[in-house]
Length: 232
Image (tube, rainbow, N blue to C red; front, side, top):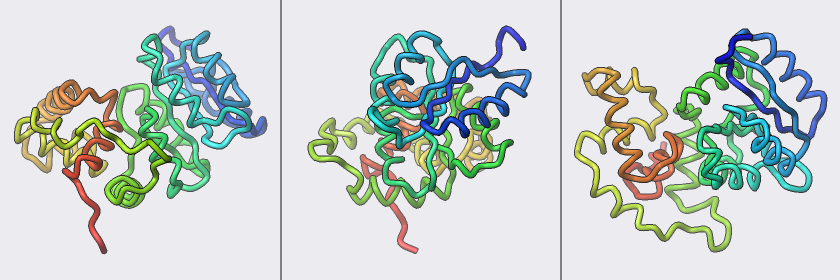
């Protein structure tokens, strides 16, 4: 195990699933499991004590669920380096949208292949968003752009649309591509610029919009109306 190994916390109420994830993660030379939690409250406590880089968080758990735990972790300034990946049974889960608003960097289906899960850990640790194009254009578009998926009193009142005025034309173009679930390399190819240029635009957009990560950029893009769902 290298000293720079990705530190992973597992949060799921199913012990058998946690064990399977632990074996898989610990088999990789560049990552290690630093703790296991069976509910959200324990996940928050272990996140604060173990300081993982990535938390694999089940949405549905008894007591404090993954959604509430993610909100608490994301709201703690001392845990700004922690990236939460929500684990869902189905990709079309309305809680996914609430998870993104709560601060998760993305989500992964529990039926994912081992290589997908390991790849998700590495992507999250690198600060990227785990938002597939199909999920972004389908689920996120449906719940955000059509105004669904909000709990009572949760609808945003921060003037998301007005905040976009701070972006340059190119930053808005890049934001649209990010909201489509595209990687920096894909965006660079689409806009005929270098990946480094795309990364610069993404970072500037995040700073101007106060976004924690790329997933939050997607939320802002849909809530502001910059990107709308297409009826197919």
